[in-house]
Image (cartoon, rainbow, N blue to C red):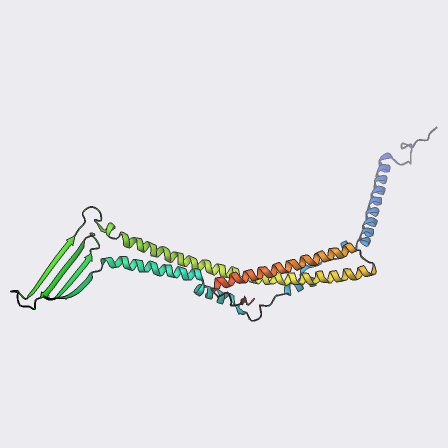
Length: 304
Protein backbone atom coordinates (compact mmCIF):
# COMPACT_ATOMS: atom_id res chain seq x y z
CA UNK A 1 0.00 0.00 0.00
CA UNK A 2 1.03 3.57 -0.64
CA UNK A 3 1.99 5.33 2.51
CA UNK A 4 0.08 8.51 3.35
CA UNK A 5 1.01 11.27 5.69
CA UNK A 6 -1.17 11.27 8.79
CA UNK A 7 -1.50 14.81 10.07
CA UNK A 8 -3.87 13.68 12.82
CA UNK A 9 -1.34 11.46 14.50
CA UNK A 10 -0.27 12.68 17.87
CA UNK A 11 3.14 14.42 17.71
CA UNK A 12 3.02 14.85 13.90
CA UNK A 13 3.19 18.12 11.85
CA UNK A 14 -0.15 19.59 10.86
CA UNK A 15 -0.94 20.61 7.26
CA UNK A 16 -1.10 24.35 8.10
CA UNK A 17 2.34 24.28 9.74
CA UNK A 18 3.73 22.37 6.80
CA UNK A 19 2.48 24.98 4.30
CA UNK A 20 3.98 27.83 6.34
CA UNK A 21 7.40 26.17 6.45
CA UNK A 22 7.28 25.53 2.72
CA UNK A 23 6.39 29.18 1.94
CA UNK A 24 9.24 30.52 4.08
CA UNK A 25 11.73 28.24 2.33
CA UNK A 26 10.68 29.37 -1.13
CA UNK A 27 10.86 33.04 -0.10
CA UNK A 28 14.45 32.67 1.09
CA UNK A 29 15.40 30.90 -2.16
CA UNK A 30 13.98 33.81 -4.24
CA UNK A 31 15.81 36.44 -2.17
CA UNK A 32 19.15 34.64 -2.47
CA UNK A 33 18.69 34.19 -6.25
CA UNK A 34 17.95 37.91 -6.83
CA UNK A 35 21.00 38.91 -4.80
CA UNK A 36 23.33 36.65 -6.77
CA UNK A 37 21.93 37.76 -10.16
CA UNK A 38 22.19 41.46 -9.27
CA UNK A 39 25.80 41.13 -8.12
CA UNK A 40 26.88 39.30 -11.28
CA UNK A 41 25.11 41.82 -13.58
CA UNK A 42 26.81 44.74 -11.88
CA UNK A 43 30.19 43.04 -12.24
CA UNK A 44 29.62 42.33 -15.95
CA UNK A 45 28.29 45.83 -16.86
CA UNK A 46 30.89 48.47 -15.94
CA UNK A 47 28.96 51.16 -17.85
CA UNK A 48 25.93 50.78 -15.62
CA UNK A 49 28.08 50.65 -12.50
CA UNK A 50 30.05 53.78 -13.45
CA UNK A 51 28.81 57.11 -12.07
CA UNK A 52 26.86 59.35 -14.41
CA UNK A 53 29.18 61.98 -15.96
CA UNK A 54 28.48 65.65 -15.43
CA UNK A 55 28.23 67.63 -18.68
CA UNK A 56 29.89 70.66 -17.22
CA UNK A 57 32.97 68.65 -16.26
CA UNK A 58 33.45 67.13 -19.72
CA UNK A 59 36.70 68.41 -21.25
CA UNK A 60 35.25 68.25 -24.76
CA UNK A 61 32.24 70.40 -23.85
CA UNK A 62 34.41 72.77 -21.85
CA UNK A 63 36.79 73.21 -24.79
CA UNK A 64 33.86 73.77 -27.14
CA UNK A 65 32.44 76.42 -24.83
CA UNK A 66 35.78 78.16 -24.51
CA UNK A 67 36.47 78.03 -28.27
CA UNK A 68 35.83 81.48 -29.72
CA UNK A 69 36.51 82.93 -33.15
CA UNK A 70 38.39 86.24 -32.85
CA UNK A 71 37.25 89.27 -34.85
CA UNK A 72 38.53 89.78 -38.36
CA UNK A 73 42.06 91.25 -38.34
CA UNK A 74 41.87 94.98 -38.97
CA UNK A 75 38.13 95.17 -38.25
CA UNK A 76 36.89 97.78 -35.81
CA UNK A 77 35.16 96.26 -32.77
CA UNK A 78 32.08 97.88 -31.31
CA UNK A 79 30.13 97.30 -28.11
CA UNK A 80 26.37 96.83 -27.87
CA UNK A 81 25.71 100.33 -26.50
CA UNK A 82 27.87 101.97 -29.17
CA UNK A 83 26.23 99.88 -31.87
CA UNK A 84 22.73 101.00 -30.84
CA UNK A 85 23.84 104.65 -30.62
CA UNK A 86 25.47 104.47 -34.06
CA UNK A 87 22.41 102.85 -35.61
CA UNK A 88 20.11 105.52 -34.17
CA UNK A 89 22.26 108.17 -35.87
CA UNK A 90 23.26 106.59 -39.19
CA UNK A 91 20.64 103.96 -40.02
CA UNK A 92 19.14 104.58 -43.45
CA UNK A 93 15.56 103.93 -42.33
CA UNK A 94 15.92 106.45 -39.50
CA UNK A 95 17.41 109.05 -41.85
CA UNK A 96 14.49 108.52 -44.24
CA UNK A 97 12.05 108.88 -41.32
CA UNK A 98 13.77 112.14 -40.30
CA UNK A 99 13.34 113.49 -43.83
CA UNK A 100 9.66 112.49 -43.80
CA UNK A 101 9.08 114.33 -40.51
CA UNK A 102 10.84 117.44 -41.84
CA UNK A 103 8.73 117.38 -45.02
CA UNK A 104 5.51 116.99 -43.01
CA UNK A 105 6.43 119.96 -40.81
CA UNK A 106 7.18 122.08 -43.87
CA UNK A 107 3.77 121.21 -45.36
CA UNK A 108 2.11 122.18 -42.08
CA UNK A 109 3.95 125.51 -42.10
CA UNK A 110 2.82 126.19 -45.66
CA UNK A 111 -0.80 125.37 -44.78
CA UNK A 112 -0.67 127.65 -41.73
CA UNK A 113 0.84 130.47 -43.79
CA UNK A 114 -2.42 130.69 -45.75
CA UNK A 115 -3.85 132.61 -42.79
CA UNK A 116 -0.95 135.09 -42.66
CA UNK A 117 -1.20 138.42 -44.49
CA UNK A 118 0.64 138.62 -47.82
CA UNK A 119 2.21 141.89 -48.84
CA UNK A 120 3.07 142.41 -52.52
CA UNK A 121 4.72 145.71 -53.53
CA UNK A 122 5.31 146.64 -57.17
CA UNK A 123 7.02 149.52 -58.96
CA UNK A 124 6.80 150.53 -62.60
CA UNK A 125 8.20 153.17 -64.97
CA UNK A 126 6.79 154.23 -68.32
CA UNK A 127 6.80 157.29 -70.59
CA UNK A 128 4.20 159.00 -68.46
CA UNK A 129 6.11 158.58 -65.21
CA UNK A 130 6.68 156.19 -62.35
CA UNK A 131 4.00 154.15 -60.54
CA UNK A 132 3.98 152.35 -57.20
CA UNK A 133 1.39 149.75 -56.06
CA UNK A 134 0.96 147.83 -52.79
CA UNK A 135 -1.33 144.76 -52.48
CA UNK A 136 -2.27 143.06 -49.18
CA UNK A 137 -4.28 139.80 -49.04
CA UNK A 138 -5.24 137.56 -46.12
CA UNK A 139 -7.47 134.54 -45.57
CA UNK A 140 -9.67 134.79 -42.49
CA UNK A 141 -9.30 131.71 -40.22
CA UNK A 142 -12.91 131.39 -38.98
CA UNK A 143 -15.31 132.24 -41.79
CA UNK A 144 -13.31 131.11 -44.78
CA UNK A 145 -13.43 134.58 -46.27
CA UNK A 146 -10.52 136.33 -47.89
CA UNK A 147 -9.79 140.04 -47.80
CA UNK A 148 -7.58 142.01 -50.16
CA UNK A 149 -6.54 145.69 -50.14
CA UNK A 150 -4.78 147.57 -52.90
CA UNK A 151 -3.21 151.05 -52.91
CA UNK A 152 -1.52 152.80 -55.83
CA UNK A 153 0.41 155.98 -56.53
CA UNK A 154 1.23 157.40 -59.96
CA UNK A 155 3.12 160.49 -61.04
CA UNK A 156 3.11 162.24 -64.45
CA UNK A 157 6.24 164.08 -65.57
CA UNK A 158 5.06 165.64 -68.86
CA UNK A 159 2.82 168.23 -67.16
CA UNK A 160 -0.10 167.63 -69.51
CA UNK A 161 -2.39 166.31 -66.81
CA UNK A 162 -4.19 168.69 -64.51
CA UNK A 163 -3.29 166.41 -61.61
CA UNK A 164 0.30 165.26 -62.04
CA UNK A 165 0.05 162.94 -59.04
CA UNK A 166 -2.79 160.47 -58.50
CA UNK A 167 -3.46 157.68 -55.98
CA UNK A 168 -6.11 155.03 -55.53
CA UNK A 169 -7.16 152.50 -52.89
CA UNK A 170 -9.44 149.43 -52.98
CA UNK A 171 -10.68 146.96 -50.36
CA UNK A 172 -12.33 143.65 -51.39
CA UNK A 173 -13.92 141.06 -49.05
CA UNK A 174 -14.79 137.66 -50.53
CA UNK A 175 -17.04 135.43 -48.41
CA UNK A 176 -18.24 132.00 -49.64
CA UNK A 177 -21.86 131.30 -48.73
CA UNK A 178 -22.19 127.58 -49.44
CA UNK A 179 -19.06 125.58 -50.08
CA UNK A 180 -16.14 126.66 -47.91
CA UNK A 181 -18.21 128.48 -45.30
CA UNK A 182 -17.16 128.12 -41.66
CA UNK A 183 -14.02 127.20 -39.72
CA UNK A 184 -14.15 123.47 -40.59
CA UNK A 185 -13.71 124.13 -44.27
CA UNK A 186 -11.19 126.90 -43.63
CA UNK A 187 -8.99 124.72 -41.42
CA UNK A 188 -9.37 121.50 -43.42
CA UNK A 189 -6.01 121.72 -45.18
CA UNK A 190 -4.24 122.73 -41.96
CA UNK A 191 -5.76 119.84 -39.99
CA UNK A 192 -4.76 117.36 -42.68
CA UNK A 193 -1.17 118.52 -42.61
CA UNK A 194 -1.14 118.38 -38.80
CA UNK A 195 -2.40 114.79 -38.85
CA UNK A 196 0.22 113.93 -41.47
CA UNK A 197 2.95 115.47 -39.31
CA UNK A 198 1.77 113.55 -36.21
CA UNK A 199 1.69 110.29 -38.19
CA UNK A 200 5.22 110.86 -39.48
CA UNK A 201 6.46 111.57 -35.94
CA UNK A 202 4.88 108.33 -34.68
CA UNK A 203 6.44 106.42 -37.53
CA UNK A 204 9.79 107.98 -36.69
CA UNK A 205 9.58 106.86 -33.06
CA UNK A 206 8.48 103.37 -34.07
CA UNK A 207 11.37 103.22 -36.54
CA UNK A 208 13.80 104.19 -33.78
CA UNK A 209 12.51 101.46 -31.47
CA UNK A 210 12.48 98.86 -34.24
CA UNK A 211 16.01 99.80 -35.29
CA UNK A 212 17.30 99.51 -31.72
CA UNK A 213 15.75 96.04 -31.35
CA UNK A 214 17.06 94.92 -34.75
CA UNK A 215 20.54 96.18 -33.89
CA UNK A 216 20.62 94.26 -30.60
CA UNK A 217 19.33 91.14 -32.35
CA UNK A 218 21.96 91.45 -35.10
CA UNK A 219 24.68 92.03 -32.49
CA UNK A 220 23.90 88.80 -30.67
CA UNK A 221 23.41 86.94 -33.95
CA UNK A 222 27.01 87.81 -34.84
CA UNK A 223 28.14 86.56 -31.42
CA UNK A 224 26.14 83.35 -31.91
CA UNK A 225 27.55 82.68 -35.38
CA UNK A 226 31.09 83.23 -34.12
CA UNK A 227 30.53 80.65 -31.38
CA UNK A 228 28.98 78.22 -33.87
CA UNK A 229 31.95 78.70 -36.19
CA UNK A 230 34.30 77.85 -33.30
CA UNK A 231 32.32 74.68 -32.57
CA UNK A 232 32.36 73.73 -36.27
CA UNK A 233 36.14 74.17 -36.47
CA UNK A 234 36.67 72.07 -33.39
CA UNK A 235 34.37 69.38 -34.79
CA UNK A 236 36.42 69.39 -38.00
CA UNK A 237 39.63 68.88 -35.99
CA UNK A 238 38.14 65.89 -34.19
CA UNK A 239 36.88 64.40 -37.45
CA UNK A 240 40.31 64.77 -39.06
CA UNK A 241 41.97 63.16 -36.01
CA UNK A 242 39.50 60.28 -36.23
CA UNK A 243 40.26 59.86 -39.94
CA UNK A 244 44.00 59.71 -39.30
CA UNK A 245 43.50 57.18 -36.51
CA UNK A 246 41.26 55.02 -38.73
CA UNK A 247 43.84 55.05 -41.54
CA UNK A 248 46.58 54.04 -39.09
CA UNK A 249 44.44 51.20 -37.72
CA UNK A 250 43.66 50.07 -41.25
CA UNK A 251 47.35 49.65 -41.96
CA UNK A 252 47.76 47.28 -39.00
CA UNK A 253 44.50 45.47 -39.73
CA UNK A 254 42.49 46.60 -36.69
CA UNK A 255 39.62 48.15 -38.72
CA UNK A 256 38.09 47.60 -42.11
CA UNK A 257 38.00 49.90 -45.12
CA UNK A 258 34.38 50.67 -44.34
CA UNK A 259 35.40 52.35 -41.07
CA UNK A 260 37.83 54.57 -43.00
CA UNK A 261 35.06 55.51 -45.45
CA UNK A 262 32.82 56.46 -42.53
CA UNK A 263 35.56 58.62 -41.04
CA UNK A 264 36.11 60.34 -44.41
CA UNK A 265 32.37 61.00 -44.70
CA UNK A 266 32.26 62.47 -41.21
CA UNK A 267 35.24 64.72 -41.99
CA UNK A 268 33.60 65.92 -45.22
CA UNK A 269 30.38 66.71 -43.37
CA UNK A 270 32.32 68.62 -40.72
CA UNK A 271 34.10 70.58 -43.46
CA UNK A 272 30.76 71.48 -45.04
CA UNK A 273 29.36 72.54 -41.66
CA UNK A 274 32.36 74.81 -41.07
CA UNK A 275 31.98 76.46 -44.49
CA UNK A 276 28.28 76.96 -43.82
CA UNK A 277 29.08 78.55 -40.46
CA UNK A 278 31.59 80.92 -42.10
CA UNK A 279 28.99 81.93 -44.69
CA UNK A 280 26.38 82.56 -42.00
CA UNK A 281 28.86 84.68 -40.03
CA UNK A 282 29.61 86.85 -43.06
CA UNK A 283 25.90 87.21 -43.74
CA UNK A 284 25.18 88.32 -40.16
CA UNK A 285 28.11 90.77 -40.25
CA UNK A 286 26.76 92.28 -43.47
CA UNK A 287 23.28 92.69 -41.93
CA UNK A 288 24.85 94.20 -38.81
CA UNK A 289 26.89 96.65 -40.93
CA UNK A 290 23.77 97.68 -42.88
CA UNK A 291 21.86 98.40 -39.67
CA UNK A 292 24.70 100.61 -38.47
CA UNK A 293 24.64 102.55 -41.72
CA UNK A 294 28.30 101.82 -42.43
CA UNK A 295 29.75 101.50 -45.94
CA UNK A 296 30.23 98.02 -47.35
CA UNK A 297 34.02 98.41 -47.42
CA UNK A 298 34.29 99.14 -43.67
CA UNK A 299 34.94 96.01 -41.62
CA UNK A 300 33.24 95.84 -38.22
CA UNK A 301 32.81 93.20 -35.54
CA UNK A 302 31.41 92.83 -32.05
CA UNK A 303 33.45 93.05 -28.85
CA UNK A 304 32.02 89.82 -27.40
